[in-house]
Amino acid sequence: MVISMNLFRFQQLENFQRRSSRFMGSSIRPQFDWTNQICRIGISAGPLARRKKHMRKTVLILMVIIFCQSEAQLVKSYGFKVGLAAESQKWEFAAITTLAVDTKIRTGIDVGVFIEWLDIPYFSVLTELHYIQKGAKCTSNVMWTIVDRNSPQGYVDQGYYSFTPRLDYLSIPLLVKFRFATPVCSAYLVVGPRIDFFLSRHGTDWLVMTNDYQKINFGGTYGIGLEQFSLVPFNIGAEFRYSPSYQKSYTANNLTVNNQSMEFLLLIGL
Image (cartoon, rainbow, N blue to C red):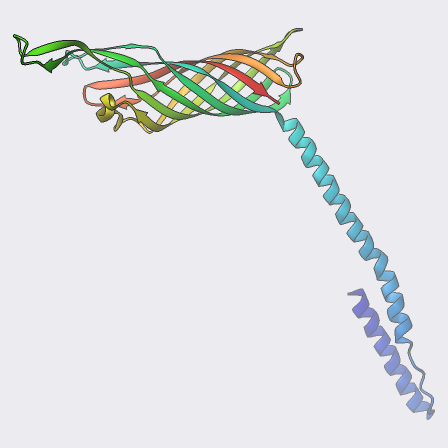
């Protein structure tokens, strides 16, 4: 805009000089030095453009520094956890049936990764992603028999019908972590909600039932743990958890099943 206004004034000045020369009858026409004026305009505009470019670079560098510092303060640590899961289930039949199932603990594996957020004293937040095996050792009150023509009865009792289903889940807990530092290590409590996604089933004895298992299940996680920072250059620790389900994992007309588990985990973090 400044350059356009200057050019417009220069053009008016030249027209005035041209008319003055015609009126005076002179053949000498003063020439306007366009090159000099344009050079002056370029010289005056150049430093301003350079200053704007320098300011943009400075703002960009400051934004990068602020972002890096905020990231460093936002993420406290990250790593993985691995351990064993002691799984069990609760089977509840309707009163009109005589069926019953006795369940015992089944051992599976639990493998996951975590990110710990908010590097502030006594408090942080954990987001985790776990692959966990659930299920139970089940024994029903139904006798299992096989046909045997050599037997006087025509069959042989094989005992009560038992099965050991395994259900694989993708588990995503969101936990609040309360830390208590000691001279030797750091103790902590974790508590929060959890969502489990049903992945697959194993065990043909339970095939009919697991076809109708809930694909998404909500629950909670409660745990305690210890962390050690001084012995090795990275963070190591151990953790015990109790993870009940607040939602029925399986629901039918006469039967409901609910999952619950306990996990013992070892952790390595950076």
